[in-house]
Length: 369
Image (cartoon, rainbow, N blue to C red):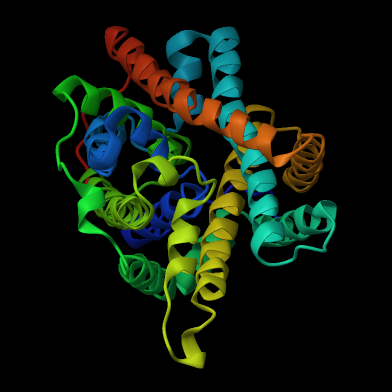
């Protein structure tokens, strides 16, 4: 194993691949249909509002790359806040991703048991996930990037295709009125979906590897827009097929909508299974990305920690944390709570660090291509 600290910079297309797969892989679990409790049949618009609210994170990432070229969140936070506060803030920032990974792996395991391997022990599924993730992250971000590049085109094409075919059997009446709530309700629902874009905050952990500010902003925005379009179609299909009330009660409404599709040919009878496999690939890349971020962040903050053993220790912690949760209902309750609050510290902390750094005159405006 290497030390996990990649050198050089990521190509702009790497940002697109990693962010798209992270957004579409993780957020299928955190399905955005809680918004139906606020907006009713027009809850699909909350996905768009959430994306608009997340755009300042990308604007900050571009400004960060311009003002602090070659520096990630850890370095700038330590300089701006001082070592004690900076270290504590950085560890709390990493903890958001670690806790999210714990619950996501458990929720993914429950999904696999529910739809694919119903007689398999949960610990086998979780162990399979984590052993695969350890293999992928062994050599750092470069391996994850190559995997993301390899699966990006088929994952993007099939995810879009599945989202489109899930519209089969949709009742148009379920989608009306198109604007069924007051304007402030859309803002509240958008804020609830703000956490859908948690992977965007990971850009600040990659500050020393990012391309130029314009290339970064362009490719990150394209990845965000592409993932948002698919999430919007998922929401449109789920609400249109099941209605707002039922869609808000389903644990995985996107997958339920896919299973609702019916084709008269044997070749595509198992469309739900195909969709599940495609989603599992994107989730695997996203989860590996998160595991690397936390491990690389810890070894960056504490250079004496070996990257290889840090990833193993984190994997064991994720397995233990996921398996001690008593049942899927508890997992869903915890996941719902995390979805509401995880993005606030993840996005707020980089804004705080940037603001303090500017006040203290750190960094400089060095434009890069």
